[in-house]
Length: 400
Image (cartoon, rainbow, N blue to C red; front, side):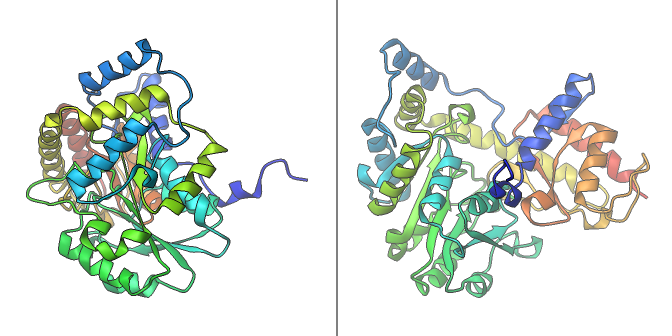
């Protein structure tokens, strides 16, 4: 009898976490490493949010809470959805969990049966397919390449839907590409979904506030009210509010689904950290002016990175609409040999040689389901980004 579950054979560890850990290990040995793998803002949580957490501790708000969130936070989440997305939800339709990842996992665990299919546009966040597998479902990746701006077309979505399709996971702006769907592009997808009433929509809106230029964020249930009753709108405070370590995610959807997710959570983690919930409450109800400041900072970094990478030999880097990632294409680098003698057979070999020879850590594209590419998180200082991109330029110039 095997000791470990057969389920583990179906999943793999997060490659983004693996790259970040590798960079830390090399740095600990004295290597000059620039880590561009972690998807988290490099600036601190706003002071008013930290102060709210301190007050919660001082006031003894450190006990168990309701399994899926304190009433005050649920009310604030309802207000947020109404204010920013034009969506009406009641507290009974809201769930709060230990990060956005748990929200998605709870929903999949509560709904998937063996044979159920989940459509996932690729490139995708590394955790989507593995969470589907852990929940017993079948991920159905659909490649959306550089030729469509890393966006799924209505024809591709239509072709991927079968009688077994239960969920469509939608992420805009996207991790890893930063691609954002315009209202018209999203409406074209929702028109397809309206023709398939068995398909539910899981909208991961985590990068909602990180959009650039004149891009306007929209969410599926906002664009097509007819999908309201089968859409789970997911969000959190990690990215926009620089609260990655606080671990608070939230969602809103049909009451039956929210109750089922609460059942899963009650037998896994129980309630999210009480102190973090009060911090998130302040984040959603307190001053929001820093969002525009941070957005401008990220846009400047995006322009810096895109500009420098497009000057690198063999790299094509589209300009993303949001998030804090770029996903350059390295087709012209495949098959070449680095100055250090490494054969660049695929994007994993590119990323490995880049780290070993220059100290720049990126995540290879195969981890996100689309190659040959790599992902850079530009959530770090201008100085670090400029140096990293200069090293990448040098590395590419040395390929022969």
